[in-house]
Every structure is written in structure tokens, then in C-alpha cells.
Amino acid sequence: MLRPAVGATVGVMTNDARNEQRQPVGTVVVLGASMAGLVAARVLSERCRRVIILERDTLPDGPEARRLVPQGRHPHLLLPSGARLFERWFPGLSAELLDAGAVEIDFCADFCWQQRGGVQRRPRSALRGPAMSRPLLEWSVRRRVAALGNVEIRDETTASGLLSYPSGDRVTGVRVDGAEDIECDLVVDATGRQARTLAWIQEMGYDAPATSVVQVETRYVSRVFRRTEAASRDWRAAAAIGGPSTKRLAMLLPMEDDRWILGIAGINGELAPSDDAGMLRYLRQFGASVIADVVATSEPLGEAVTHRYPANQRRHVERLRRFPTGWVLLGDALCSFDPIYGQGMSSAALQSEALGRALERAGAANRAFARSYFRAAGRIVNAPWSIAVGGDFAYDGTTGRKPFGTDFLNRYLDRVIDAGQRDDTVVVRLNEVVALVRSPHWLLAPALVVRVLRAARRADGVEGRTSIGPQPTSVIDA
Image (cartoon, rainbow, N blue to C red; front, side):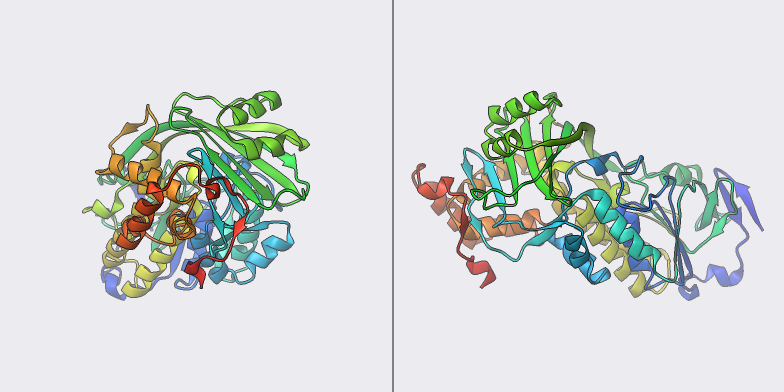
């Protein structure tokens, strides 16, 4: 029988259960049917007999926005690193999304990117991923996960605590409001930034992971428009980043049903307007001319929606020394980044891949598995964390612990961006890093540094600086 203990519900441990090396990977409970929770369940379904996803929210029967996912109403695309994993786990998903109206984006050739007074060159590349609404992607993935024979999704179900041994050294299940407790071998917390299980393990006597917080206070406004073709438009998506003093940026992405979704943001006190005239003025004031021209000639659909993102937050699970076996964090519960960088879903996919590998190597949800996963997860989030935090520290008002070398790297990245307005190879390398296909260290490879410095020495008025048409195939893809 299971009985309550300090802040949790505990059960009696048998001698066989103590031998974790022999313990099979039986039932896993994933808390949260977020994108992170869904891909984690998919990976675990190949390595566990049973996977149960518990979700507090009501899950819709179609691609509809969810009450507990406010960011779902804002621009989304899947980075190439994530898109490749999604297609591996869900064969045919890309074609299904495109059939539903999603738009495939070549992150180099199809993106018109305005920054530092110019436009990035647009060589063709292998860096591709779909642009679509978050509800369409989530619904498509959720249907496929639900169809797995050993996966069960329970919505409108709230977990209220953990089950554990009397000693508290191992989690053995989950307490559920208004329903029977669920015994399991592993609990995966994919509940988002709040990471609900942290309060429960602290009641069991464990410290929460050390946490890094970089306060940036980004405020978003998004608006949907009718998308029509234009003979003069040879790009599929656009982005504009104002100078650091403006604290402004914007992105325009295509999505299903022939629509655009515009996202504009203000950082550290800069407030983006939500009225049509104000948004158009806002775009033109910081040089987002390409986006402004589309907005000025497109029919708005529905009302503008807003979202506030207060801070980047990273929980350093890789530093944990004491933690209950049978418990891990994943997705935004582990690390959440400013959404302007578009890294959350792909980072969660990479973490899920690492979770599966660690479990496969260990053969059980034991401490060796957890330590291996925590180390791998820490390495995975290093790159997107450095990109997001480094970018946010370019703006006055950002507070928190600044990673060593951030100011130097930001100055160097300015050179990289300038070089990308003249050099195809630099553009591809930069986008490989942003897309989480390569480590940021690749930007410091000697051959690339030479190209960046050579481009920086050229005179400012080079015609290629303002060219926005697609360029010949890059040598990277040859």
C-alpha cells in the first residue's frame, strides 16, 4: 500500500525494488502535454512498456489555441535541428504539415533578414523547417503520439504530488487529484517554467537545482493578416532587428490558410503598440521596411494578442549531487529562452533525444541514467542559452549573470552579421549555429574568422549589402 509522507505519498520498498540495476523500465509518467512532453513521450515509447501523459488543460480535437499555452498565439517555426528529429520520430509529419498549409522555409534563401543597416545575403542551403501555427504543429504531433499503442494521454488531469519510498531516495509514482495514484519507474517534468515537481522534491528534503536568471522583460504583440502572393516578393519570411538603442524587433512568418503572422517586440521597457496604425509606424521607425510594406497592404484578421516574457531561466541539473532517483526535468522546466530566438521546441527535442539515449545505455531509470541525462541536457542547452543570453545582453537594462566573454562575442557577432551581407558562406555558418545544427564555437573557426575579417575590411557601400534576392547555391551544400 502507498501512504503519505512529508509532502508526498510514499510506498513500501521491496528487496527486489532496491536493486535498481535489475529494475525494468516499466511505466513512465510525463507531466505536461506540451511539445516537450509529447516528444519525450514519443522517445520513451520505444524504451518503456507504458507511457502516461498527464495534462491539466483541456486538449482540443483540432488545431486550436490552448488556454494554458498563451505563447501558442504568437509566431512559430521549427528550426532545422528540431525538424529533422520530428521527421525521424514521426515519419511523414513534414508532408502532413505542408498538406495542411504549413510553408517550408529555407533559413538562408527564403528569409529576408534586415539588421545593422543592411540585408543578409540569401544563398540556398539545406537548413529547412516548416513555418506554421503552434496549434497546427501541436495537434499534428499529439495525434501521432496518442496513436502509439503504449501511450495514454489524460487531459483535465492534475498531478498534486509525488509517491516515493519512505526513505525518499526514489520517486515511485504520482498523486492525481480526484483519481487513483499512478505508480511508475520515472516521472518526467515537462510542466514548463514553473516546473511543478520542484516544490514536491523540496518537501522530500532535496534542494532545487541552481538557477541562472537573465532578466530581459520582452513584450510581444502579434497580429494575423491575409497572405496574398506578390510578383515582387521572392522571399517567404522576414525579420528585422533594430539597433540596440531601439530595443525593437519584428518577424513576419507564413502559416496555414494563406495567412501571415506578424510578431513585434519591445525589450526592457520598450512597448510595442497593438493598434494597426501604431504597429505600422513602429515597424517603419526602426527600419523594418520589408515587413512594413506587407503589413500596409494586407488585410488584418482577428485582434492583436500580447505576451510578456520576463526572463531567460536555466536550471543547472548538470550540477545536482542529491536528487531522488526516478525524476528528471525537460523542456522549459529545465531551460527557457526568450521566444524571439525560436529555440524552445528544438532544444526540447534535442533533450528528449538525450533522454532516450541515457535510458537505453543504463537499461533502467536509475541514478546512472539520471546523471548521464542531466550532463547531456546541460551540454545541449549551453548553445541556445549562450545565443539567447548573449543577444539579450546587447540591450541596456538586461540584468543577471553575464556569461564570460559576452561583450567580446557580441562585438564579433556584429562583424559576422556585417560579413553576412557580403559573403554566402558566413550566412550559412551563422544560420547553422542559430538553427542549433552547429555549436557557436564554429563561428570562431579560423577559416571563418578570416572570411569575417576580410569582409569587414571592404568598403561600406558594396552592392551586395542591400541585395535581397536569392544567390547561387553555397559551397556549403556542394
